[in-house]
Image 1 (cartoon, rainbow, N blue to C red):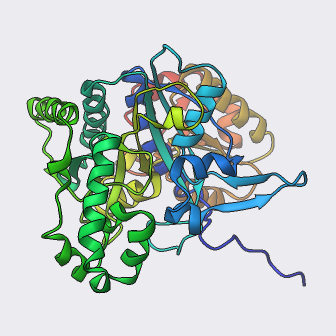
Image 2 (image 1 turned 180 degrees about the horizontal axis):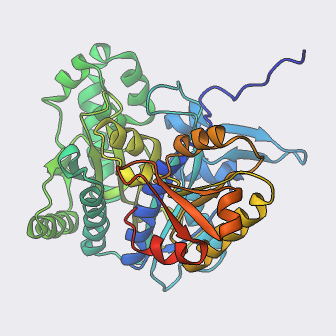
Length: 426
């Protein structure tokens, strides 16, 4: 017997029982984004490796450890995208969507990082991302945050997530702070955890993200980022906060929030939850005004975010916030029993779909006894079964059986079924 082939570790199948929940989340987000006037963009999964090295930073964990990189048959180095922002910038610049224009865009799809799989974290994971270009003022920062806050309200997650907010200032201010932080930490290098010692040489701001308690204790007396901010960044952050305050969006200022990618400046934010253990970030983003120029375009202000689909679904399931109707995939199950009934059943199903496009109808195929068909009707989760036996066909009728309530069953003329269904509540 041939050896069975299994999925690659950390790259999971999304099974039919799970798909309705994914569709619910994706459709909710899609409708929300459309209501704000955002347009969808779709980018390829594979990009040139240089795109991510130049944008994310060569000394980040993603580029150093986590990217799926390979040489194709032409010897070109290609990478499965580890995040969507760089791809979106590349696509917009390549197709002339940025210069002297504003764009509000969104995308969804799989990303790839070779890290240790664990609950809520996978090697192939899905993100929904939003990117805006051409707007430098803080009102667009506020809009993308208000948009996420509205999403949490629609999903019932408002009380389950907390907004953490920070500003990194201009690139110059950030560089000055970096020098001060390095000077402080270098004197205490032997007290840092091993990962932070390495980051001190390559990406010192990431030390602020350390989960090591001793390192965090050292940081208590370290220079503070906000002491190095330029006036323009202070004003930008103050306007953002005033809009959020006016909108009633609560937030916490976290000066150690720096995000893991090199391209961020000014506003950075994360929506975090304490309901999923250590994997608590469900949405994160910020401003990246220098990235377009860094990738060969003209200076273009930009801000965006990405949310993890798997983590959001896990959070919805953990808090039991999936609406019952989402898991209900069939409204009506049609059971044809006896000779000639299959054709009548299929034609009836199509007529009912013509009359009521909102109805989810499944017709039993493949024959079988009345008892076996009723078992499948019940297993389908349908509210109603329409029974078409030889007697019904001879009399031009159909028997309607209530599978979920106490309605019992009744017989209707075939031509009256559509009108009767219109009165039913599913």
